Amino acid sequence: IKSIGTSAFESCIGLTTVTFVDSTAASIGNNAFKRCIKLTSILFGNSILSIGNSAFEGCLLITEINIPTSIKTIGSNAFSNTNNLIYVEFEGTINPCKSNAFQNISTSIAFVPSNFEDENFCGLIALKNGYCGFDCQWSYIQSSLTLTISGNGEMFNFTHGIIPWKEEKLL
Image (tube, rainbow, N blue to C red):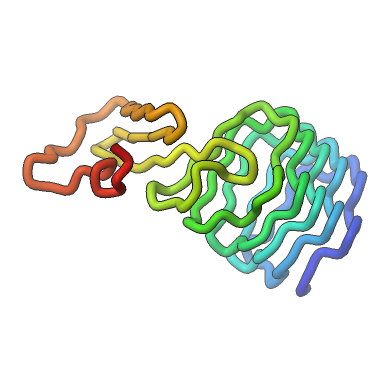
């Protein structure tokens, strides 16, 4: 399969999981999974390069999405009206969309690598993050100049090391 066609699974109300892990599909067409109201899980493989307009719009039960670096284009409203979506993570450094792909969702933040190029991700605030110890993470919101360190572990000793938020010129 090279692509998932336009409206191929639109309104398939019994569909609960979509997995592209071993897929060769390069693109997901417009409205491909729109209004699949019982869809709870999407697992993108590294073969997916683009997600079409409104591809997952109205998939009400999706709570989290992890977008791999392979995805170079995300169409407008691709994940709009996924009302329970609370966690969005993007692994790449180049913003795959300039449009609002995530409208009417439950979060306004996307987790991105510290070297992500923009201050927003598809209309969401880009929360730059990384690890700073064992079970310790850091995150930074550019617009509010807020650095947050969280976790239950111990931070690395930065006496002779690279401090990630300084190395990335965030502070």
